Image 1 (cartoon, one colour):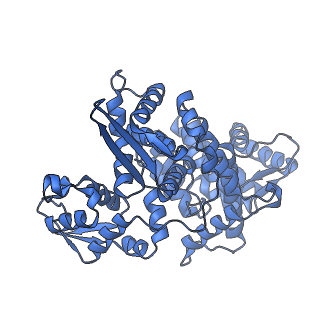
Image 2 (cartoon, helix red, strand yellow):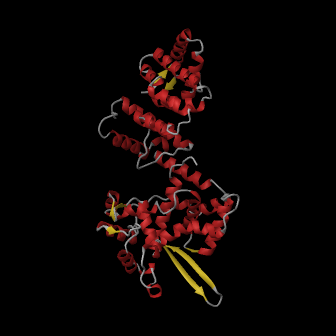
Image 3 (cartoon, one colour):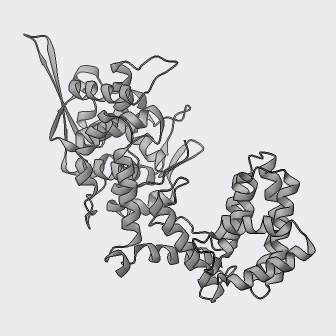
Length: 452
């Protein structure tokens, strides 16, 4: 349980500490203010184990601009103060001078690239660090609501551990801790007007995502904002047939060529099953995987989803692939969330392309490319000071268009006018495609924010 120190108890312990070390009270008061500052100096001070750990393992080494020896001295003085307070505070004192604390102070001081993972491991091992769960993955950059609720979850975990409702080290502890956090985040609360913490975190993330960047970007995303606020339907569409077809083939083990590509027999079987992938009358039968771009897109998507694995010159289903193949709706959701590139220039272009496709029934591809180009330029993307050309933005966005067309989520109609010598290129999302694009954008908008 957190330690509550009255103003009198705090003053008494600081006075006794000052009798041993004249400069120690100043350091300890600074540390306590950093961890548990009070607006009212007469109010009790609430000190939690979580606050102490974060201070010693991150804030002191990273935020206090003093030499390493002085940081060690602050930690030791804080430990002596907690010993003088006594009771449960004495249990916290050992953290201040522990080997873990000293190791982290040194690692941060030396700019050790392993300091960050060491910090995460130390916090996680304590049991009171809120873990990522199926309900929410915490961001390394948080808004005020997310940070506030994460702080509250840490408090609840600390209480659960102190009261024995969770027991660190027991078999299944990690799962029970994750379930505890998920339940806390998803539970409707009277103090939140019947909403759950996850609802407020999601709204904060969505608002931040919609509001960042240029006017051009915000104008495009404004058209999909209401759709992203809709609840996810109880039943999702089934997984796209081209993906399930490839997974079913992998159940029987797919032979690969020497270069690791899909074999010729499977390539030809794919265009027989999906005739729109290949014009056999014009080109004859395909010879290799690279000939059929739609097959390449489906294959690459399955790899990104970790549904397939290679063993020698065979392609097999992974355990995840087996599980999702038996749950077509879960496979659809997983597929949708991987349609857009993860980061960089391609991700920026594809995100905007998805928003345009979702906000309109039909989209002229030429107009789409020009609209995306204007937004990308306004966002400041460049290479060595050179702004991207329209064709470069179109190529980046094309990754999304190719995979959605291959999966049958977006229909592409091309018509050449011989009189005007112009082509009409039109895109239309299917019903399943609209839900896939909504999920894809939702995962971008509501996902955890990361340091660039």
